[in-house]
Image (cartoon, rainbow, N blue to C red; front, top):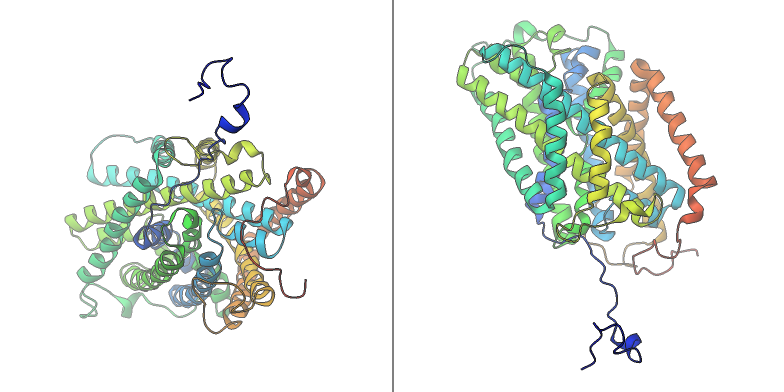
Length: 475
């Protein structure tokens, strides 16, 4: 046999003997439970904080209305995502969908929406983690002054390291701590004795009508999305699940069902224990609710439930933001340097490391309601594009023309509902955060111009389409 390790030997046969370079790819190790843990883990923190700002916008009844309207919006998102992602099973989720269905400019913008939404959600979780630990330490008299910023930084650094080391351990942890956080919500609900009105829950005394009228319902839609924001993150695991056609629809749809239950239970307990004026501005409402019951064990359990929810959400956000950025780098929409996979851990390690200092900077410098708003706005832009994607997807590749892992029913009703509810929420955000809305739109317009004028020339257009589909109808 020719010794090709010697610098002289095997020159004549070098061409045939030299092995082709091995491409390191993401590892397919996840199942439906991991997809559920990723989607619910990112979102469940919305039941522990953030949703209550909707109460401050329009009162308790307005917040419940916004909760259910947002539930319809995200049910449409889950149905559309389940069909397209089970067919376009690639890292990047909605970015990969837009790339194949709409075109490069839309894909670039969707990739930015995803990265901004998940990074700002990660920042929000880090802020709440610091505030929660500070409040718990003070309430329990454990230590003196606590620097909450140190816990913000520690949370981001630890979760970035965990994601760097491997996706299976990362999302298995998410599955476990998400289940514990959900159990904390159910435990608080049971302890509040909903079957005995007036004993613990004081809805008859605390519930008001609509203090700001019908306009309050519109304003509450802004933070009503926080109950569910991030469930679409299940699509970021598409390239790492063992069976996309089964795992993605099952994990996503069971996830939205879980969140609909958790959101309603959360509203019911929170509004029965706290006046809407206080609830509407609380940082950790469910932890505060547990304190009001007078049960020390329940307070401790809700502390850990809230902590686990924030950690699970931040953990999933690190996973999702890095996958979207990695996919954009691999397609040269961003510098190709970000498209590298770690040779040992099989993770997009450069994308993970890149966002850690950015998240830390926002966490220590930006108020919580601002980071939540940035995340919601980016998510809204992504959902709007998603509604257009499913309409174009069905027109270009009708049912039967390509294999689908899942077919969502009632098309095009979910797309129409999604567009209508997104439009309503844009108006709600503009009422309270019009400056931020306009600033973010200006940012995305500037980024689009940069992509068209500078970055697009580096994109290998023939390499970015990975699906073996026939030509679209009409082409």
